[in-house]
Image (cartoon, rainbow, N blue to C red; front, side, top):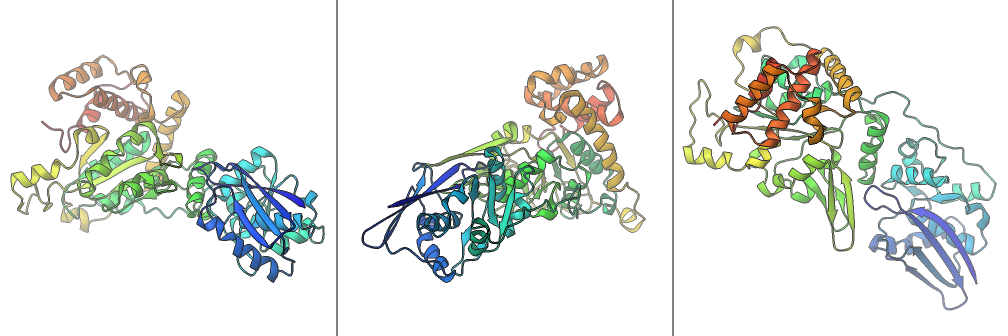
Length: 501
């Protein structure tokens, strides 16, 4: 009777808890038993491992094989356990030295010919292996992603034979070097210079970028609402390394990591038919939704009122906390969701309410019902609301008159640097207890804020959001405190759709 131990990693939300693969071979009728709370994909590893070992010219033991994935109470899913199970069988049957497996971790799915297929969550596994101070063997296709976790030894391989040759001292696998050497990846964000006219909307876009504020565009169809929103990522500073690692780790666990987008802020634009599980996260095994995939980036919701109201309401808590907890009967996972919300909508079902030259065909009841799809608490969490009117012929036919994204981005970066040096976070993320300390206006601004609170019947949340926006406006202009001019502009952004009463 022989026993072999192999270290590997499971996936539990963004974490990669350690799993010990225990392989026991004993005399008896040939059998292959897999225990330790495996799902269907893991149980199918028995057939993949057997075929891979035989085709790779190894002997498959004709004895009683028991494989335990410990700890037994942690759900195991995916094909990532194929490689450690195969190595455990080889070590237990004395075909490779068991001592060579010490101080190493292994993850990978085996094809029937013994080659390695990619896995999800390679970056999370690499970060966990770094904390455990072990080298990580994994498929070559995941090497660039895993190597982003600097300080861990990544040993990429194409097949089971390659790894066995390394473990037996025949052919060493060189550690993988980080291939992402540029400060930023490929950013294909369109330029703000393409937008004609819409100077108020462009100003609101700059303010939103400078302070990480949520933003709602409303106006008739074809006025450039979506065009403006898609240019917001080009105004934002690049992700720092910690933010980039968090974002990459989320994409890694859903299998969507792209090294070419390293340190580029994500831009997610789900269709309005998206379910709550797709937007917030869910599934029998909890997976991140669109709000988590937009972590440290932009979540753009076009046709805002067309989204299911229950789905939109489920975003209210993540907008405040920057995280979402997905609980299921067997598993609970928490995902980060620090995203910047940008939304766009028409003023009415037909889209032409208030249009200067086209008549609206909607009844007052239809318009009221359309507006009622967005709750007051949801609108209260939007910092900036701006109308996007039709563009005139002279603006469309003339030469571009606005600034390019690079010029606006330079101002945004300067404003962000002021915020980070002062308080450590962008203004939109200031905690309520620090808002009045850091965003207090001067005497004229305070008088204007008091009048606005009284006349517009603003909530405490709305008042704090006005102060945050005014602080951002002061940062853009280089002023130490928000003044009356900054407060007036910030208040104006609260008097948009659904608020001017």
